[in-house]
Structures are given as C-alpha cells and as structure tokens.
Amino acid sequence: MIMNEESIFSSTLYRLSLQAHLFFRTIVPEPQHRRPITLSNAYILTLPFYPMLLMGYLARRPNTYLLRLCLAPLIIWIIIKTYYSHYWVQPSLNVYNWGMGLLALAMTARAIEFAYLPQGILKRGEVRPGEMLTPAVSRKQGVHAPGDGSSLKRPASGLFPLWFQDSMEVLCAMRGMGWQFGEGLHVPEQTRPIERAAYLKATLRSWTINYIALDLLESFIKLTPNLHSPSGGSIFLHTLSPLPRYMVSTSIQFATGIAFITGFGMVYDLLTLFCVGLLMHSPTSWPPLFDKPWATTSLHDFWAKRWHQILRQTFLVFGGFPGKRIAGDAGLVIGTFLASGLFHDLSMYCMGQGTSWVVVLFFLSQAFGMISERMWRKITGKRVGGWPGRVWTYLCVVGLGQPCIDTWHRRGLGGGLVIPPMLSPTRRIFFPLFQRIFETVRKS
Image (tube, rainbow, N blue to C red; front, top):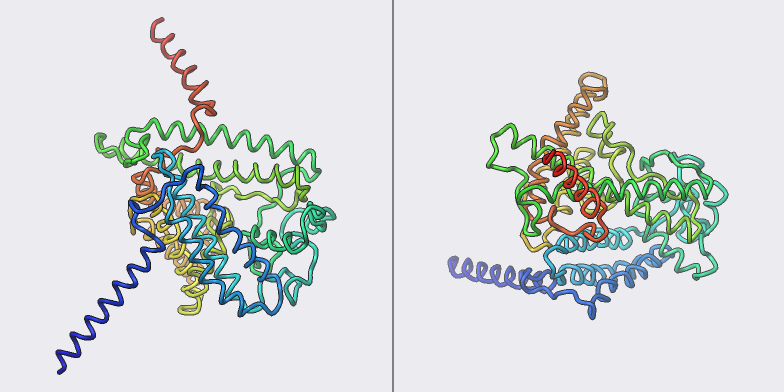
C-alpha cells in the first residue's frame, strides 16, 4: 500500500514538473524554436510598452492596488513572451538579443514593483500618488542646483495629456531621482554648465568623445583572435605562455569595461541631447551617469556610487528586498548581487548559447567582498579606503572579473555589431592610415 502511494506521488510529481516545463517553454521557447525578427513583424517588440504604460498610470493613481495585482501576471507574461520568443537572425546582431533579454527582465522588475506596492509609486513629499503635478526630478537631492526653476516645469506639457506624462515619467525613472524609491541614491554632481546652450554643447562634445572611444575599443577587441566572430571565443589565448596570455586577457578586460562605460555614456548623451534640446528638459534633470569609477577606493564606493545606478532598483526588487526579509542587511547585499548575476546571465540566454554560473559567482563574490569591508570596519573602526582600498577593489573587480568577461566573449559579445563599419572612423580612417604609415616605414 505504501509503495503504491509512493508511486502515485512520484507519478503525480513527474506530471506536474512536466506540465510546468511545458508551460515555461511556451513563454521561453528553446532557441531553435524562436521566431526571427523581420521588417514585417518588428512592431511586436513595442507591444510590451503599452501594458506597461497602463501599469505606470495605475501606479500613479490611488485605490488601484487590486487591479495592479490582477494585471501583473498577464503583463509579465507579455514581456517575457515577446522578448524571449523572438530573435535577430543575423549572427552579428546576436548581441541585440542580449539587449532584448536585459530589457525584458528590467521591465519585469518594474511591473512587479508597480504591482506590489499598495500605495503605488510616490514622489518625495507625496502622501497619495498623483497629487504632486510637478516633475519628480524637481525633488531630487544631492546634485548641483536641485529644484531649479526649469525643473519645476513639465517638458512638452502642451503636447500630451497629463496622465500620459505622469505614466511616462514613472516608467523612465530608472534611478529614482525625486521618487521615494530613490531614497539613498547617490547622484553624481553635475560637471557641465547649467546654462542650456553651453550644456548642449558640452553634451555634444561628450557624445563625440564617447563615440570615437567606443569605436576604437570595439575595433581593438575585434582584432583579437577568436573575438572577431559572432560565435565567440575566449579572451585567454592558449597559444601564448602564461604571462603574455594574462597580459592580453587583462587588456581585453579593461577594453571591455571601458567600452561599457563609453557605450552607456554615448547612449545617455544622445538621450540627453534629445530631451534637453528638443523636449526642453532641465539640464539638472540629466546628471552624469558614472562618477569616475576608476577613482574608486572600496567595493562599496564602486558599486554604490561610482558605477551607474540605472539597474539599482531592478536588483533590489529581484533580490535585495527579499534577501533583507530573510537575513537582514547581509541578506540585502547578497540578494542584490545574486539578482544582478542572474539578471546578467539569464538575459544572455537570449543569445542562444545557454547559461553559466560563472557570471552569478562573480557578482556573488562582490557581495561577500562588501560584507568583508563592513566586518573590517567593525573590527578596526576604519573604513576601507585610500590606495590600499583601491588595490583591493581592482583585485576584486578586475582579478575576479576575468572569468565573467571571458564567459561573455565566449558567447559572442566581442563579435557583435555595435558601430557599423560604414560609420566607424577607426576602420575607415585610422586603421588604413596606420597601415599606410607602417608600409611606408617598412619600405624606407
């Protein structure tokens, strides 16, 4: 009788797991079963924005909690289904599949946050959502010229209805400047002139520098054997002896890291030019994205202040807040970095080359490094800082980060199309010029 009950239980458990797997694969199909993106169906990629616009609107209205809870599962299903069941066919565009995965998970986190906060999303100083009509950025703190006159005005307010402006504002508030969920956020001090014309000129100059730097770095990475192919390759060249091998891998790692910084900066500058130049946003609404990450003096300083904070709330929603409920402040740190690792790796699943725990382990190592900094402070009474803190941070980020960067390049990160060759100054001008100079010197 007992054996029969055990077999029934096992059979039921197997059927349930099989049904769960089949349901999962209806949302996230195997790579070979995804639909290719073409000109005729590219509009599908915009579909998740419409229900998210609705969710943003509801999060800014009182007495909508139950409705948001009911809508959340459907909206999350639409987001994941859209971005995980379609793909860019051309191999050089595979890196954009990673971008779709990143977007899907970031939007999912926003949907969860919008749904599960009973009071909705509040600006600083609000008691009920929607009662404050001025932009949230006018409530920002800790940046140059907070609450200046131009930031009190809604940009392009005559073009769109108020409900649409309110919804778009909360959807685009990734860092949370001026919002209650952005409490404790470090915002870098503004380094550009506040006067609009001078600010736009400085931003255009920054965009040009970032564009050229990104192009140089991408072109350099693609010169490395194995990395120029969209199918990917290792940053560790095993044909070299150990010392040159790690010199090359470290150079590629630094180039990749700086490419991330310049790439983010280039896109951010472009958005800034559009919003400040055309939509008449206040220049103070667009503070710097990074805060000199190379000048870091501790892991806490690097990850909480120096590095960009665009995905801060995403990682808190996915792991930080649940972790704090389980294990207090230590759980907050571990949960946040565990979520960061899973976010970066599960989004890369869209590239069709599986998953890897290497990425997750790297981000978890940063969590334990930050906890050790806190223990050091409790034992010694001193913060990690100065040049010893800088060396420590570089060892933790650069030293432990090489396997993570290698995993990304093995999946084709370096071979992806970032700047088209036709628009590449390096490949159209600099490389041919250097080659001509080299040939001239060699013949002379």
